[in-house]
Length: 537
Image (cartoon, rainbow, N blue to C red; front, side, top):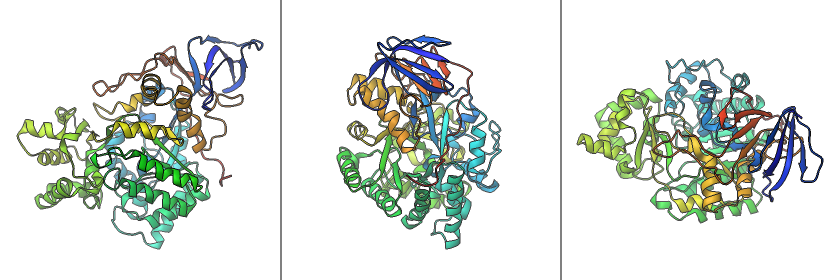
């Protein structure tokens, strides 16, 4: 054997009881699992794992590492958590498929998520198709990555930033782009239905695209139209349209936020239970925190986003149009803010693209406005313009009881939604998976440890239809985590968000140590994980 892990507590990902065993790895796969009393396994290297637990590598079902994986070879934010696979292309906006003009527009639109604004040379954008992007990942990355075709980017490519129904020719072009992305290896399609231009698509358009996804055995992963005033109706729309399309559904960061949804998680879960009982194929992911994270520009009403980032900035510079934007945001409740009138004391700036605006980071818009002696909208408008829409925010609108109830559900999986940009990113980017194990399993007992591991491993592997990942089984890939159940914990906090976790001394991908005795090695064992089968079955 290349490696034998001796006397380890195996938490195999199934949700069943743990057991003690020696585990042998060879050729990048789990070659043998021998329980107590079986003959000892010979190995070129042995690791005494007494006191540690061995589990499959964690799968981050909602990651924003599309450029970070290329820009930062170490990628400790995820590797140190025990993440061995991330799902990229989230929220309907990413960097493939594109042509040159679309790539420029996408880079402007999601600078706050990923960096990579036009003029940034830290990443060589030497791809245009989904397949070419996956090939770029295959040159060597820190952890494995799967990809969702981003519906907003596809719409932008086919018809620009127009807020109107697609013509038959434009819809046919979008279906072709989704088809090509799936044939090149994407595992499904994502949407960001509070982000322009994806949010301009109606249900009929989305249903047609989901039919393509269903044909290829992929899944639809929507950030749906509201997590606030219209949350339940938005969830119902996604359940209904995927039922009509015959498509599997995975609900992204499935939260119930804002004051209007306090204590309403049971209503969401009842909706899902009814759909599951009727035969729907549904799963979801959440992060174990209450605040959300996005860009400040995402709070704007959808009509203000028509035409793209440059048009948004022009509207913000025009006093009369800016006043109309303010009215929608503060008094009506913009669709970008989930139909809820914005509360500036909940909007904390977590990062800026322009270093000259760093004094805003760590303060709410209300606090910065008070320091300047002006109305919050004046501060927000100035920041949007001066930072060219590149500011990221924490939005403090969640409810702990909703978080706990949703994570207990039988179709729940873990997703960090980790935005790695900014001086003060959300701690979920560095802490989601150890926070589940330490805080919610060990300290609070919301889930048992074995069940928690299943949520983070075999359940997402099943959604991704990966036949040899997500369990500690002979023949499965040796993507594994060794952690101390008594000490594992997130190090990241809202005050120190980039602190690495504790209690995860070893992480292996393809049987190679990515984290060895608590230290990041120089191994780049990650590759793209591609959808390979044409139809479900």
